[in-house]
Amino acid sequence: MNKAELVAKLADDAGITKTQANAALDSLVEAVTKTLKGGGKVTLVGFGTFSVSKRAARTGRNPQTGAAIKIKAKKVARFKAGKELSAKL
Image (cartoon, rainbow, N blue to C red):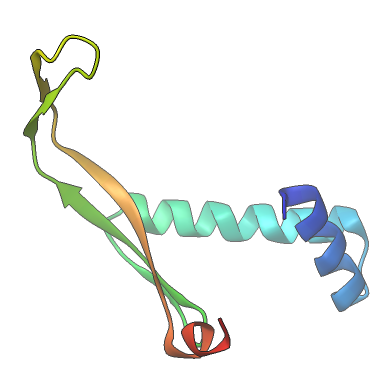
């Protein structure tokens, strides 16, 4: 499912226009992004938890040449499915 299909589904289920559904979805994504950028986490009960994890610097290999390369440390977004979502899958 892509964003357009999700917006259409939200609009149908909530009885709102696609424009309103798109604005609501954009607002959700922006709120989650801002919270994660600030180092917090977002928990949606029954769905899951979005959080930030630190990935340490490490040494990797270039698959074409086999040469060792340094991979920088970085922060990555993580999602852990909640109990109810996991049970439905």
